[in-house]
Length: 341
Image (cartoon, rainbow, N blue to C red; front, side):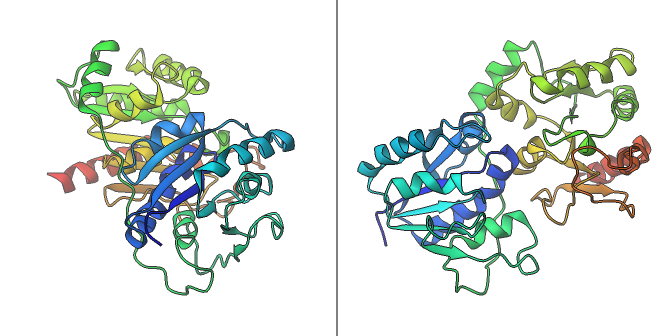
């Protein structure tokens, strides 16, 4: 099956796109001459373009929740001329399988999801015990549904553009003369995944005293959270949330000596950049979506009520993150730095 084109329907979340890279690597191992084209939302395209396995990224124009059946039909029809031999659908929704179906791609693979029997013709049935991690589930789609043994899953690895990195430093009046601690205080999914701003502020004070610069990364939705942290810390740090593009954030994050993140897309980006990383888990589980790197320390209090996988705490206290103290995070950072010495 050489010299073929594959169309991969990417997930909507940036972190999930990072976790899809091992699938791309396995496909390239199995089909060295295949060209992998990824159909992805505009906001995640920058991450996919940093993956050497990907030949082309095609913008998915459909937003969250959009069905737009006729527009999906037209989109699929427009892709027929590309001559794709296989489609792999990573999201589990019915609507995500429509474009490959309308494109008449001969082999259309994916997990059953929302009863997609009519849209997929190579259906995988999810065994959560055998495939506990999201990355394993994606990687399994490189093989047939009858394939029992999953090989060792490669680690994601994003490329860094050094020229653009230098340009970004200049554009934001930054420098790397002093060590950088990057804080990513947001989490798109909801407040139950976000370590409180006052804890981030205490950590910022600790590392400013050690001579670190503190840079805050995130989307425009996280700008107010970072502003709160800066206020609580007495003005420490540079708020880059919503100011950088994702491309710029990737290149600047790569300069950090250490990154502190909630379970978020930027956590997976930092892991794929090889950053030393402390990952904070509240309502979610590191068993399902861990940072895929050996350079991470995972902190979870493992309370009886967590993981609940809720957007906001159903008990109203968010103890899983409120009780996670800055001193615990600082200890994990120092462990990472000691291991790197």
